[in-house]
Length: 237
Image (cartoon, rainbow, N blue to C red; front, side):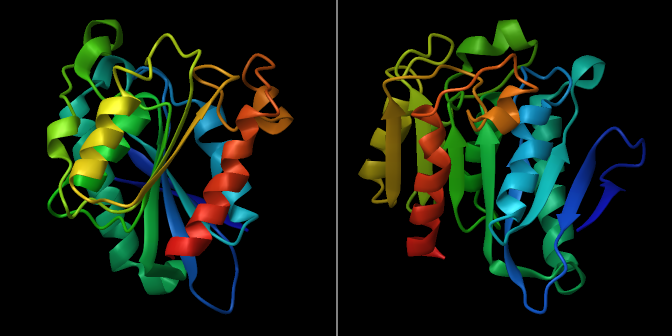
């Protein structure tokens, strides 16, 4: 595997980590947007997700968007758009099938991923959202000004896979995932939802691989979202 980082702005505040598998054919691509409340990017949601999906024959890309003193919701959205444009422009070199290029986001990164997937000029062909922030209920806590993603859903939103935990008190199901899936249904967007009885917010994959950098947060039942998402992807790409 070839791993490299490219800057996405002149100040090198934002960047794209590329985990490129050597292959004799173009592979599906996955752009990863980590959570972490606009503090340092979480390894559990970025590098470890990238490597996990790389083992499933995906070319993977982890976006490092503006956080900490540079935090900006609008700035992060622009960085994600720039990341997709870079990947598409260099698809041959990166050995990516742009018709099978999607996005995955966790928590605050899930809000950004959903916003990008819902945009008029999105290049994402599918979206995976893990315990996503959907409403701007955490803005004060995160120190940013975001938006309600629900009204952004349209008939052009790509197929979406969503997972979370019913015990999640940070982004409760009824406040975040439920209204978003209702909007997907209202706009006839194909989607699959898994709201697990176990687990909680910020679980990452939920297995030992992410648990060892995530306070030993491991839940075998919750971690089934990974296999379920891979099965779902086989149906749509």
